[in-house]
Image 1 (cartoon, each protein chain N blue to C red):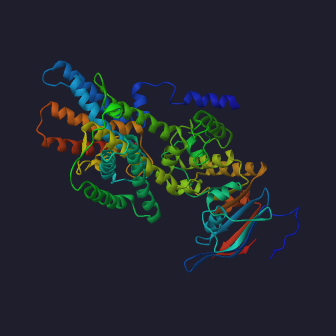
Image 2: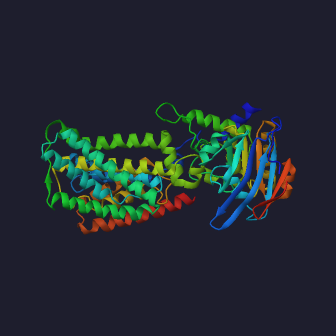
Image 3: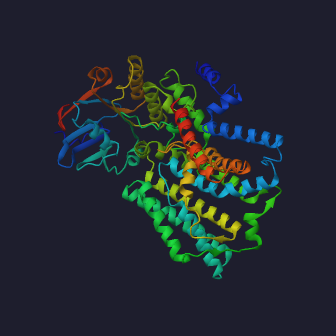
Amino acid sequence: MHVKNSNTLKESSPFIRVGILTWLRMHKAGNIILVFGTLQVVAIIFSLIFPENFRYVSKSNMQVLFRAIPPLGIIALGVNLLMISGEFDLSVGSNFTLTALIMAKLFNNDVSLFAAFFAALLLGAFIGGFNGYIVVKSRVPSFIITLGTMWFWRGMILVVSKAASESFLPGGFFEKLFTISIGPMQVQFLWLIAIVMFTWVLLERHKLGNHFFAVGGNKQAAGALGINPNRVKIIAFIITGVFTAFAGIISTTRVHSISPIQGEGLELQAIAACVIGGTALMGGHGTVLGAFLGAALLYTIQDFLLLLRAPGFYLRMFVGIVIVVAAILNQILRKE
Amino acid sequence: MPDNNNDLQNRPYIEMKGIVKDFGHIRALDYVYFWINPQEIVGLVGDNGAGKSTLIKILSGVLQTTAGKIYIDGKEVRFESSKDAMEYGIETIYQDMNLIDMMSIMRNIFCGREETSRGGFLKIKDMRQKAMDVLLKGITIEGIRTPKQIVRTLSGGQRQAVALARAVYFKKKLLLLDEPTSALSVKETKKVLDYIKQLKSEGASCVFVTHNLHHAYMVADRFVILSHGKKCLI
């Protein structure tokens, strides 16, 4: 009787006959995979038909994309974890710049490169943890708290930098680690892929990931099931802080300097990438793949418009439209 | 008041003595004495605001008492959080059922008590198999096909089944059910009640909070009636 039961269960399982479309519909990030995939196919076909006018599949263009996506991508992956746990971090843009600035300052004052590197990561962790601590202790929405810390750390950047850019010329192995290119591929992008995989394992295959979803999905229930929501949220804030610092380091190593106004607006771009990728604003739902493709999509669209030689001011308008449309689509799909 | 129960043989499994709970200046529970024997189903009934849910929440560690003591097997215990209560084998199924909507059945059953390898990595296959077994063994409510199903897509009865399956899997000694049948159809209610009886035969005790005296009457060994925070009937 028992055996028979489990057989019928297997037969009626939707995972037996899987077509690509069913798989997409079942996949939590199916929406963004479909949109992103379609865009890529269309772009590749166009660039093969009009190789002179639309140089999408050219080595230089691919290099541009593989360099441009990682900083936002890495931040978005952290912000994604945080949003799944039901919180926001608006201070990532300031964190991005301050940590890189401190690293550059330390290095330029004869601190060893790797010490400066770890100091930056540590400061990122501190900024994240500090946000988290205030949010869970005060119970004020993280949107407000991190709005405050965003300005606070931005002010700190101006104090430390005296409103001037700081150069960063590490050279040697360190520079290679974050800038080398292998054909059209850029090592920064490989770092991003590594972090995608790390975050995926954390979110989908680790206990902590389950707790992120639980706390963001239903804080009371998670608490009643013996999870400490405050601890989980602070961990999510710290991860976001470290990822952001790492993104700042990668970006600064490539451009060789850090300016005090850098990173402004990154916080909203990161949230936009997550929303496009299907992460719920209220927490409890989201995928790693979605946030990654969301960030990639933002840059891909900008790249399309640049390749089509659209005047610069259309860029933002178009990105704005994409965000709104994506959010509406995700809303509809989630209701189904 | 049967305050000095020295008969070890008939000692209640859980005793709550002189429980007081104030919310601001409102007294929700007023020196309540409450006990549960081993393998006993207690029907806790009373009007809205009588303090039923408050009592349950104290027993499950969600709320702390203003005054009063809780004894398990004669030893005094303090529940600072629901985790403490869970360690004593007390599982609560609330009205809102404590499920996380956007998560799968499997992840809900094991939420907070995940089976992991060293380093905290989830044993997904093991947990999925166990979730499947427990869903098949328990109340097989139609429509649950796989433990991968997202809880939000389930009906009230199915959700109740998942919440109960969780309690069964972790072999709880005491099950606190807060209005377990309020969101269920007649058929589903019968299954849940049968299930509670089955749990009793397996050695668990149960406190069954309900408005519906008829449902409680079908399973309860004893009734406790609360009115305005006071116990008015055994």
